[in-house]
Length: 439
Image 1 (tube, rainbow, N blue to C red):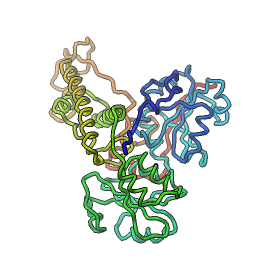
Image 2 (cartoon, rainbow, N blue to C red):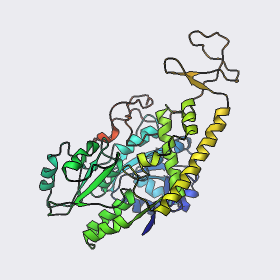
Image 3 (cartoon, rainbow, N blue to C red):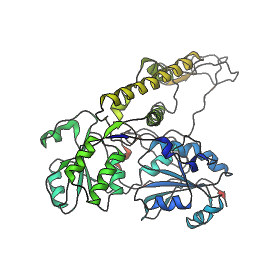
Image 4 (cartoon, rainbow, N blue to C red):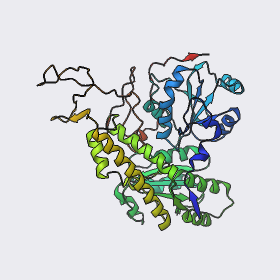
């Protein structure tokens, strides 16, 4: 059974293409009144921006909002509603929209009151964390192996799903599934460092970055190991069928196991953009530093999918049949070739930065005519242009270890040893509210 993981054209509906604010390649889906009502019937966490095409604040927010949508795709959908359309005015009034843009997070569709974004800066990072930290997932952390049997027994009357994961924190995918099926399935996670817990439970150690999903039917102390692809669509289909109760569990698992992983070109393009986001944040917002160019020229990143998985996955690449594997390898080679060609052209341009003796970035002179303050040991005649750094530092993936430090000025996100996925609490105070265009 073949299943294409993602068809971009299906996600980019005509309403999105015709939207005045958002570009065609944005993953933000524009909703009308009927589409909004349908989206709110789902228990998923989602973010909705109420905007108007003429609004200057909205126009400036669009690229940041689109980057945040890319960072959490496909686990947390990002939507937009054009309140300038006559057919949407009633909806915007019902949602209490008094200025543009108004951004709201709906934790569980219409079941839970929305949370309005009041951040001091409408950057991709701020919007990303706003979505990531407000998922009411209810996933229980089992820190030690002996806690697992206790948890199984305490919740024996309910279906239970346990994730054995080698990474730190709760993967965003597991959070979104825990939220979506909160009323039907009890979720938990155990950090299986280097696969040691798996071995003690009689399972194989597993590859680095790998995960195992164990499902315990209601009334049973024994698990069935999920054999399908650990991605959003596949796991959702599996859990939907369990709740429906019309399919035998063993048969359902065999169907999941037979699913073939066939990434298409559109999906690989989305993953390439997500990769570029992570690289950019790792380099302080720059994507054209000397070491980054050199890495691309050397072919680094060819194993990116094996290390990080694809959009909506918990890491690692699932097994693929030979035909699908060859197709993916051809697509990856083409992408890497394009990256190398782009890096080669960039390398021929005058360099704007180099690494100093102390490891810091030092800007070199460029033929721009603009003067700069000389560093120690330089003459006053040295000139260079200082490239600007966008305040929209791209949001890192849930697997990165960057945490936002909130402040009144919404300064760029510093790196810490914490993982944002470790936090179960809601978002921290967002600072001073940004201005809006009034109705």
